[in-house]
Image 1 (cartoon, rainbow, N blue to C red):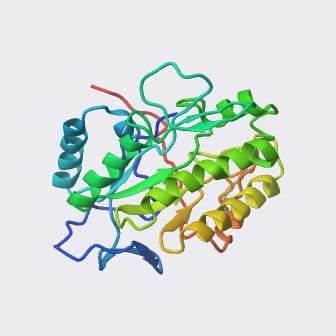
Image 2: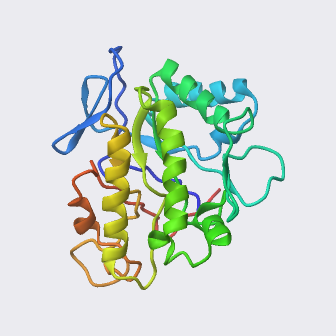
Length: 267
């Protein structure tokens, strides 16, 4: 599932930034601070930018983002495969031994995205894995290590490789002020699970990321299920997500929710 909504729970109208010394982004109460500027900031998704093979195309996208006044861009930090069919891929998962691709058709493509963002003052949210099967996701881990998406969160072999991948990505950009936040997963769900499953996983995974990178923010990347105030979907916890409970995890800096209009029309 590709997200086309503004990503941050606190995002509102875009705010044009004045020139400032780049610094690590952080929270301040219910606001964010980006390069010394406090406020609410608008963002969008460009999941595919790390899969472009032409640097000029990446720069063109970043120019448009910057010129539009958007400040935050979420880009896929994963591209998992179970066999190498060519093209751009970041990680090949296999029960006999997985490979993280640091070559020119691998994480070097993400390197250029970060470099291009740095030079334009754009800040990136980078998720490490997808709940959905697009670009591999948890389904690719299940294919390699067994189990199901529900057991992915507690599958030792899957989690070991997930952490190896996190370490590979974080180590490349640990000093980059272009990183707004690390995201544990895109739309993590555990259908029918007790909310402790995702809570315990998020608590452990965020602590691991924090041990690698004390400066950048971390977020879960969930859709906001389990919100208080109602009894109908998505207020319930049938997908194993308790929004308020998860926000209590000390190494998570802010929450996210994904909004989809009940009806929309493309003209």
